[in-house]
Image 1 (cartoon, rainbow over the protein chains, first blue to last red):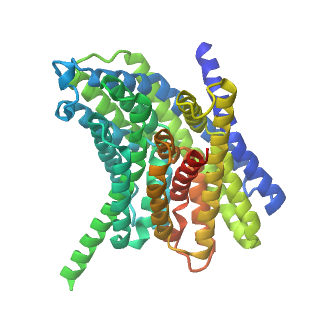
Image 2: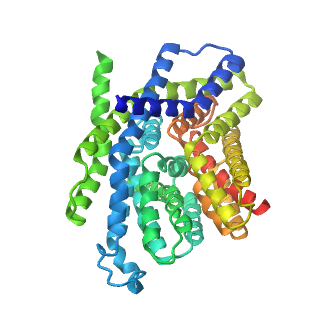
Length: 258
Length: 243
């Protein structure tokens, strides 16, 4: 019974978050476009499915993955686990290899479970008549997030300024857009914002926060949060690189044929 | 019968989506940290919920969010009224951001930091005013972002000029904004992109690019989310400099 009440509460909360969007859609559909929805029954069913889906999804994350993710982040950043003898040696970045590796792996894995990215990848595959592969795109994005979390945890350990990393990433993307196939630029710049959502943000933030709390002289509020901003930029870089690579390979194949 | 088959297909693909997380968590917990899994029952039940959730979400996506976004884009394009289209775009962006729980959390955190640093009076009232102003700033930024993105699709300007100019503005503004605000600003970029908004906005962009002659949906249809994650950063930094 308690389980059911909890589910119902989560369902109502999701419904409340979705409400503004539903009201806007109905308002414009009925008063501006002035046509009934094409398939009202199916649309309503779809909305209910989405509500049920998000509720189950968030509830499941809260039951299984978030507590475990937080626990693992604390265990991995504990000086005892990392074999750091005393606090003066704590800031040496070479002691944190497992943290970077875990960050990269968990960033990669959570990105593959991100529902918004799934939606965009499916749409991209559909409109490109399968020349963009949904799984290929998602793996390229996941590699970008993995690199972002590894670099981001390194930044927290070394205590270097987030600003320089962001500007460097901007410069790389700006240069890439000049050379990359124009077809992919929009998609590549979109996916960064898409990936940082329901699964990735809580787990990655937990990692950043416990890392910043363990290290001396780091402010969890200021240092713990930069991971997400890197994770919105690096996927753009990796997807543009993937597009570039695919084009080179195609050109090479074509020149071999002639 | 067809939909039951589809349902099972979705369940299987959802399992594959969740599998990497479970592998990473189990390998690290058992082989690297050498600790047992604290609560196996919770892990199994939670994972089942996540798989079910993804499955229902994907079903609903195909039934409602994608078709609605595209059919509304088509209807607006046929109607030919740019004003109503842009108003719709603004409302969609503003409405999705203003009620977003993660934005509410970020704004509260920003108010706490500002209060502790004595930017503002350290009282609950001043802090809640500050948080509300910040939320409205971000929501306005997201609304404006979708408007600019839709205009770009209508006119057909290349996306990367906008984005690179945006990067340039962020690079120039960041050193002038208070350090505490810069962190919040970089974070605020991701808040607008929720699980509901992303499919809807993507379908809107692609639908628009599809219904305008001479636009390629891949080149022109994407890019709305890119604006929505860039503009809030600029607005929040400007907000930090002004206050």
